[in-house]
Length: 277
Image (tube, rainbow, N blue to C red; front, top):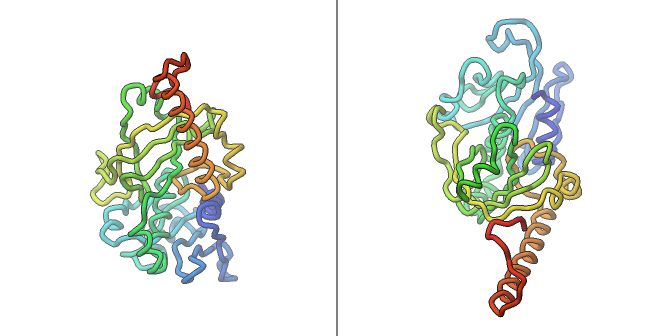
C-alpha cells in the first residue's frame, strides 16, 4: 500500500484529511483529532538512509503512537522502526512499501487514534456497549464458506478493538464484493501463534448468526451509506447500522410467522436454521 491508500482510509474511517504544516517539508502531512488537535498520525516521504536503512531512494512512511512496551516488541528493523523525528519509545515509523500488510497498517493507525482520543472520549469508549464491525474476508485466501459448513463458530484474525458480544458483519471481497455473513464475537484478544508477545495482531472466535444472499448488501448499496471500500476492520456507519437492524428485525418477524404457521399445520416452513435470510 502507499500513502494515498492510507490517507483514503483515514478520510473514510475518521473523516480526517492531512494537514501540511511545513513549506520546506511538502510531503509531511499530519493527521490529528479535530477536538484536541492531538496527532495520531504523520505521513511523509523520506530517504531510506535517513531511517537507518540501506539505499537512497524515497519511501512513504507513517508515524503512529503506541504503548511503549508493545512498541518495543513490534519494532523489527525492516518494516516497523523507531519513530522518525519522534519519541522512540512512544512512536513507531511504519514503511508503506508493501512490506507490511494493509490490515496491520490500518490496525496500527486505529490503535494510535484510540490512544490519542480526548480523555472524555476514551472514557466513553472504555464504557461502551456493543459496537458493530464490518470486517473484510478474502475468498482467495480463506474458504470461509467451507469453514462455516463445518462449524457455526470459527476463529478469525483480530486487529481492532472488537470485544465479546460485538456484532461482526463479514464483507467477502471480489468477486463477491458484498456482506455475506452476520456474526457475533464470542472470545477476543486471544494470542495468535507465531506473533510476538504484545502484538496488535490477535485472534478471536466468532459465531455465525445468519447468511445473506450476495445481492442484498453489495458494495454498490454500501456506498450509499458512506462505505466506499472495506480494506480493514471498521465501525459501521449509523445509517447502515439502522438499515441492517431494521431488515434483520423484519426477517426475524417473518421467520416467527413462518414457525407459527408451521406449528398450526400450514404447509409453509421456515427451512433450515442456517438458510440464506
